[in-house]
Structures are given as structure tokens and as C-alpha cells.
Length: 330
Image (cartoon, rainbow, N blue to C red; front, side, top):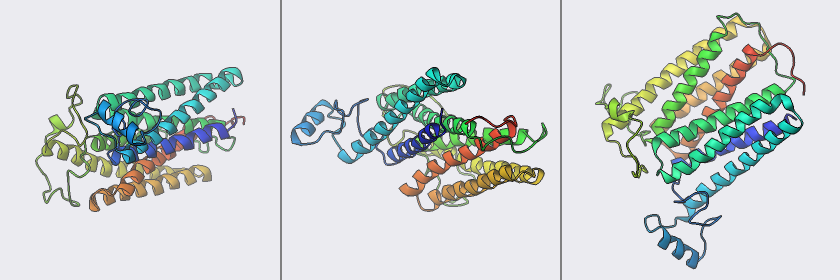
């Protein structure tokens, strides 16, 4: 399988993640009240008659063309990604047997992502489903990028790390995944602005928080979660946890990066570690800007996109730490 194919799929997956964040953060997740079409059509209803019929069919969700188009463009991009992964799957099973298991897993993941996209609409942006959809998108980007690394002859294990040193890349990856989960839970519960001000929260260093309800995964069916349903103390608990998690992530990934950089002489690994450090600082700064400037849409969307880039860079460091020294054939 040529490198350009998984690379194109990775770039498209990044676009899908960013479009998904833009759709969610601009409150367009229910811009189309049905799935996979939009008000029963393949596109957004246009014209007075189509809009009137759509409004009659969905009186609780009248047509808002701008929101509907955001949702449908995201669906079109996700559908194109699904077709590309399907093509990679077929190519692997017919031409590249070494990639059969990997592409099969990717196809299963992308198929499940489509189901999560459907449930996001039918379950009225339920936080558990939307967070799962976000994590699935990040996982898709990571696996596609890993396939790029495997197919590229330029990437091989750059450093002969000890068993103890190899624990650091794994630690970085685990900490980052947990923080992305916290970030997704914060966003899908509309808790991004639950705390105003830095470094305090609403003028308090330790505000009243309700962790039991804030991290309750299931609130039942038939509930419209758009705008959030949690009371302020529960949202504050989520937001506060994400803040603490951000500091912990900065220290753990930053510290691990410095330790690896000092113990490794290979320039390729060092360049990757520098990339991790740069993206980590950018991501932390975007998080601060979200709070300081009251969640501007471009900054909030960038926060999601840079999270994906940070995950890709940490995956690269893990790949370099654990892959055999033999170069992969192109």
C-alpha cells in the first residue's frame, strides 16, 4: 500500500475531527434532526416548499440552513473518509496481505464511528455518545497516522532505549488519552465556561463542586442534551477537573519529553520530542485562551485540532521507541 493513501486518509480524518468540533461548538450537532439525510433529504432543504415540508415533518426542529449545512458538510467529509478506508481495506485484502488485520480494525472503527454519529442525533447529543464519537475520531486519526509511519521508510526506531525509558512514551500516551477524555466530557456537557477567570474559578480557589452528577455517565433516554442539563456545581466539577488535568498533562508529558531528550542522542527522536513540546505548549495556551477570552469559536476549534496533532506526535514517539530497527518496505 503506497504511503500517500494512508497519508491522504490521515489528513482527511484530521479535517473530519476539526469539522466535528466546529459543528459541535457552533451548536449545530442537531442541525439535521434525522440521519443520514437532513429532513429526509440528501442535502439541506432549500426553497419555500421544501422548507415548509421539513418544518411540518419536524415542528420541534425548524430548518436553520446555516446549522444544517455545517452538520451535512461534516457528514459528507466523514462519508468520504469511510469510503477511503473501505478502499484501503479492499486493497489490503487483494494486494497487501500484511495490512489486512490493521485495515480490518480501521474499517470496524470507522463503521462504529458512523453508528455513533447516528446516535449523536437520535439520542439528542447525549454526552456519553458525543464524547465517544470524539474519542473514536481521535483513535481513527492515530491509527491512520500509525499506518503512515509503518509504510514510510524514513521512520524506524531511532533510539535504543532501555526498558525503563520506554515507559515514558507509554506514560505520555496514557496521560494524554485521559486528558482528551476529560476535554471531551467538558465540551459535551457544556462546561467549558463553568469557571470564569484564571487561575481562580468564579473568584474562588475551591468552588462548590458536584462530582457525583458531573461524572454520572447516564441520565436516561428521551432527554434533549443540547445546551446541557447539569446544574452549575456539576459543570464546575467537570471544568475544574479538566483544568487540573491540563496542568498534570503539561507536567507529565513535558517532564517525560525533557527526560527522553536528555537521554537520547538520535536526532530523529530528538526532533520528534521537540515537536511534542511545541504542540504541548500550544495546546495548553489555547486552553488558557478559551477561558480568558470566553470560548471564542476559532480558538475552541483549534483546541480540538491541536489535541489531535499532539496525539499524533506522541504516537510517533511511541512508534520510534518500540518499532524494530529494520526499515519498513515502501
